[in-house]
Image (cartoon, rainbow, N blue to C red; front, side, top):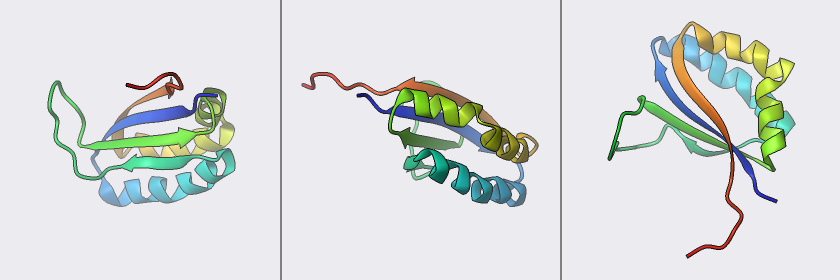
Length: 100
């Protein structure tokens, strides 16, 4: 079964307030089995436009990834982010087919 992912691009406008969001989301991700794959490390935009931070979180499957995002627990935590950062978030199903 293919994994599910949150792909997020984030611009933080208030780093101190964003720290509260980053701390609070840990319990939600633990509950849903989320695992960071990318968490705002070094990056270089090769094409197009991106925000300053990129985050990828892996879940056991697409349904779990969607369920986490739509959960009441994440809804409460998301409110901590909304006033201190702009984000584009996509939930996507991973690819589980043949590889080159």
